[in-house]
Length: 125
Image (cartoon, rainbow, N blue to C red):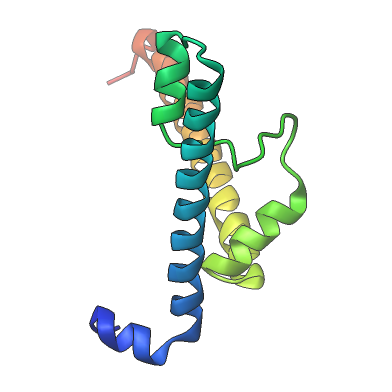
């Protein structure tokens, strides 16, 4: 942690990140300028959608995948969070607690419904 200037002076990874961001922004600006020059040279009129598309930043850099999530993604997520071993123990603990509560609720329901038979039971005094 530190100020922006300290990070720039000491962190090479932070410098690379800032350089990548600036380079990406410069490329997008150059692409926009080249596209607008091409349109002015050819004298074509663009629709409102094309203008909005040129003015809005291009955010199609990410890949979209469909289907199921691989198990390696889950294990990487656990490793990054609490660790693989502790995450596995935590999952087993939560599952066991859920099963225990389910068993206790079924037992209590059976006991409670069985007490209804004593309602009509006559006691000898």
